[in-house]
Length: 143
Image (tube, rainbow, N blue to C red; front, side, top):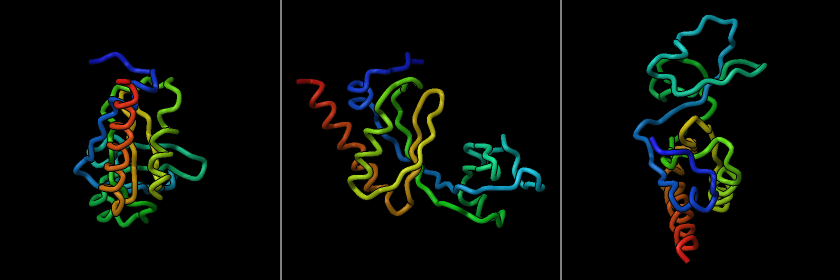
């Protein structure tokens, strides 16, 4: 495994976005209610406990089968660069690049990579914007 990178210029120049084959859904369930998902089960991508309930990011087909209301259907893009959890500016940079294209994003920073969730219909435009940001950053870094 590589060492985490904190230098913003290096992060942007080497972020290498990858569009995951899986489509996901954001759902929220009452933690006191009986749930049909094992939080560590294969359909669950991520969880986050809030006062209002437990947010789950799950594979879309599992969410559809469950009958739980879907809050957001998303494409999943992973920045494959090993980003340092204390790096400054990466999220702002890609959020600005996506925002300039009118694409909303929801972000999960995990131990090794940043994961970006965008509306399904915007997946290809988001990839193009992220690849352009990487390419432009790499060109500036090499000067």
